[in-house]
Length: 186
Image (cartoon, rainbow, N blue to C red; front, side, top):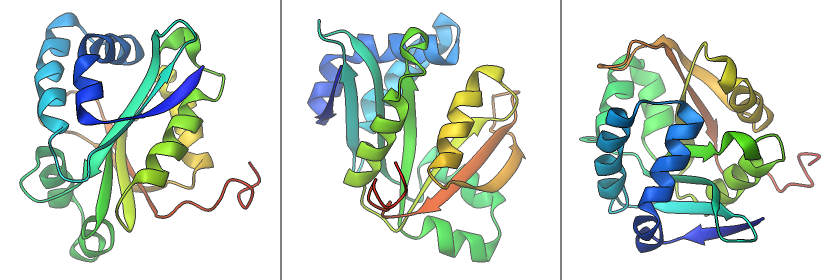
């Protein structure tokens, strides 16, 4: 496996693969995936966009992650902003890199790919803080929860419901930059 930084056009060229990995990792229905395809295609043009991809030796996409500078007028940012206290908004959203997606195909999970993708993505990120959201009660997300905790993410919102999704989410954050891998004992 090899991890590569991706430019917006790299992600767009592999959009079918990206949507496939996303669907497998999140176990989403196909009609939801078509909607996500459109969102992803617009996300690549956002300020501060950064992406990474993990490819197998034969070039198959095993995982990917991306994010960008979070700003007012972006749907996720505005939803989270409305739920945070005024002091937390200043701390967490003033100069924030939003980790929008971070996924690994289920059959490739458990081998450190997600951790490598997250570390590489956040090393490229502009911002003083980083935020992400993850489903609260999904057993398949337990690896994701352990990963985020290992990287020092803390709870900002729990049992948060985004419009149009019946599931509860947690919004997690941490400051940037990450410490060097050897400083964190990794």
